[in-house]
Length: 191
Image (cartoon, rainbow, N blue to C red):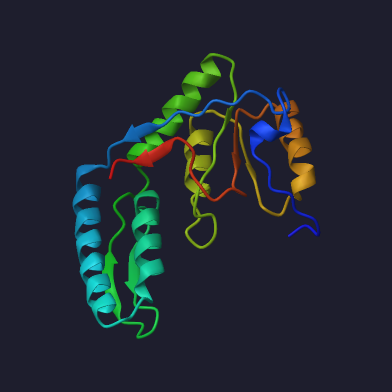
């Protein structure tokens, strides 16, 4: 944290300080098998959470929330959910997607290709950039579609990120994935 922190609302900063920004929400349906597995996972984990809460055990709250939020974006890898205390396996899911893109990944690739045709660049954010790494698949998919992609890692200091983006634009990059954020903008699976 910085030594001095000020909390302001954007309206308090004044007009025309930030560049124009528009965000839109796009609903992407899960693939049918993915939907079935997600519902099974949700039911299993919710039942385990209820049992734990009835015993006064809140240790599953974070686990259940994190897995249910992350799994739709990481269904390309197996998922084993363990109880944080007992290490008992509560759920086990196989990967749903191999080399083929998930519906959200396919939408992103199509969108980026459309934008390139209009001579526009795309800046997109991914979640789960640590052990679940959601950056490699979109980068490979977009590169495979003929797009030049760059991934901004958290190791780039915050005061150097704007320059990093400018450098990538100068290099002709079509799509930028700044993974220092921890939320996905505009791309969420339908619950």
